[in-house]
Image (cartoon, rainbow, N blue to C red; front, side, top):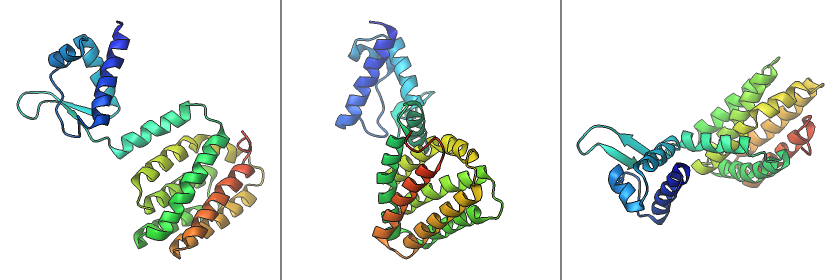
Length: 235
């Protein structure tokens, strides 16, 4: 068995134990020598598997001696999950239309949840981001960054951390192509005016607790913005 296939076998064995509940957050893995003997693989394969899972945020190793030493099952940080998803979306060559369809479903639900659950502080953050996009003469990159943050803030306001992580990952993967499309817009003032109107409508629906309307406006906004941007529509 090659070293590569050995480390993949170890990863699969650890994943299986996590999925079955045999390993949970905080559990200590057996020592390297013992784990290699259990799985009938080389210690080098075990070490490589642990490095990979540490990189994914699944495991954490503490060197030294005593009760705090060893390799533990870690709670995957939200930022690590979002980063992993963002890179996966960016590298998987999904068609833009597939990503847009996923955004519509996900962000429509997030906006409806935000209208139902958002606290006043969350609504104020949305207002702040809309104000950034409303600034006269705002450049395309600053607008794009505020736009990205606005959509993520809606997901966060809905109180579903998985929705917000997925939204951040998908929208983050689109930052560069959307900015590139912005640079190709001839009538930038007209584009900005349309997007501002749509953002204001979504914001007010959320602020007023209009659950269905917030979702519908968000879905319509994503579709309209995609159709209006060069190289994104129908890609």
